[in-house]
Length: 124
Image 1: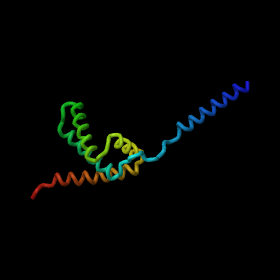
Image 2 (image 1 turned 135 degrees about the vertical axis):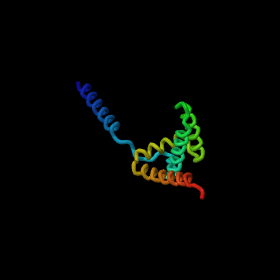
Image 3 (image 1 turned 180 degrees about the vertical axis):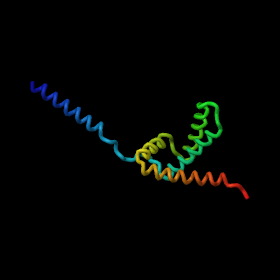
Image 4 (image 1 turned 30 degrees about the vertical axis):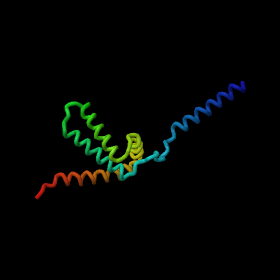
């Protein structure tokens, strides 16, 4: 009888410990090889420019658009010396920290505005 009572308390303790650990928020520790905010802004600027290029060429199928976009994306990652996994981990980290992501997108917006002003200026 004491054994059944002990087992029941042990299971209750283990279950409550598991529930507490499952319900706690993940750590805010940055991942290894976190891309700096400035570099992330540069990468995202290039990514958004690639997306705009793809939308302008009006490919007939979604599959074709995705293939072309993946190729452009790989070129961007190669240009900045970043692999896909590092980019994704960094993007997820910054997405879970809104203040950091806001600062990054402020830089992205400013850079995109500069680039569109340069392209839209007409020669005198």
